[in-house]
View 1 (cartoon, rainbow, N blue to C red):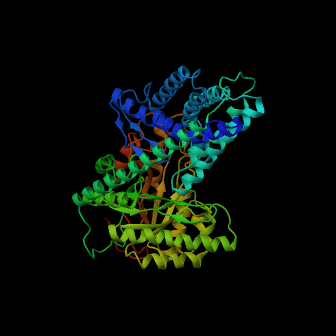
View 2 (view 1 turned 120 degrees about the vertical axis):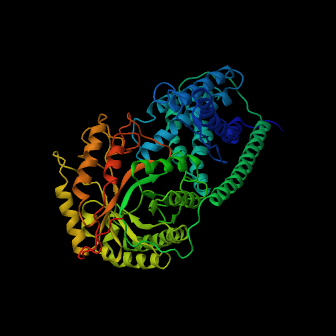
View 3 (view 1 turned 90 degrees about the horizontal axis):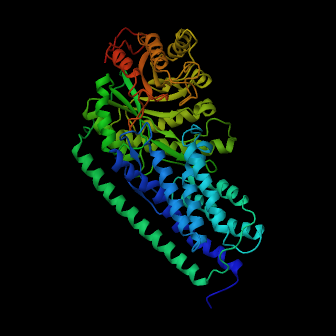
Length: 572
């Protein structure tokens, strides 16, 4: 029997071919444009990520990147060409052609919707491809639904069962496979929206044969298996390359002493586009010393399940993997730089109160998380370890944090700091005496006269109360008009102002640099992909006049004195 009731076969056919079409759309929109971009403009093609559920590549730089030939342009053009080619198949294969076009559209708009809703990304970045993608979703779904006999509700049932439900299942699969899911889950509203706009259409196909469903299932298994083997092959290649790189870099001396205090002329060196394992990251790191930068904060991001509060370090093969952290630390040490390891928890729970039971779970899970990085810091000889970053209301529980500090010290012998958010958290923490440094993520606003005197007064009061030097674990300002008023805003909607960023940097250096309790600063941030430049209004100083400000101030002698009540002057 090769044919059964069409209300069974058509949804089954849609489900069985969902995965191959999803992968083809990913290749067409995420991979092909990156290599065409590289070929036409001389851009550097990023590594191909091959995974059973996500496949992508990126291109950076190249001629005209900031003008007509940016990466977004190539993805939109690829999407448009794909939809036009599928239009030629519409009459013969309306189901497949329409759903493939919709998948292309979902791939274009999914990352933008997920970025805005999940990652709090700027709403205008990637908005144009997202709108184009939504149009392709609508076009593709109209083509596909024209193949469904019956009225509007019959078409709606098939579309929801064959498109929306498989898309809704993908986030769970991605979560099980420990892969990022925001781009996929965000496409579901686009599917439903595109489905709801379908009205009266003339059916083009009336039957779906059962053997077509079998072909779709077989094809899905074949594609999944091929990508799974490709992922395993990539993992073996990556491990081999990491081993070669580590073999070429200097090893930390066994039982080498850690400096208890030193002056930090630093920047947060964060991974974006290229991981810490990459040659690009090592090459950019080598240029930082030109600006007097002698310390970097290496910032691995771990994940946390918001439901169970379970935390996990950065996974192998990701931008901030343990292997990548080890490589970039060894490279920095080889260049004569010091390294602060500063692990973050992605979307931490510290911004809102927890019940007593949930708080107990959180501290238990975080202890395991930070112990992992304490052992890593000891092994790679990171010069300083930051035991936490901006956990808001959780830092009021002093005994739990003292217990964490004791556990960390059982694994790591070097100096410790905690990075407190400006304001209430920084000013109310009571365990500063258990650490070598008081850490401040300094996003206190500057007044309109750019005087940091009031900020210094608040910081000095804490420093003297606990007799500890203060390290600005983060400080930063966007190169945008009035960023001194909202220093925490990255990519603000304000117009570009390179001078504003310089003026804010000067204000902080001038106010803090001569203080005997000031242990230095890590500016936020320089990224491994070299983002920045004179047309960028973000907090990144790279390629902007602010880098010359760093160079000027980092060339000056430090005045750190430890202990603060003593007379010894440390000028390291």
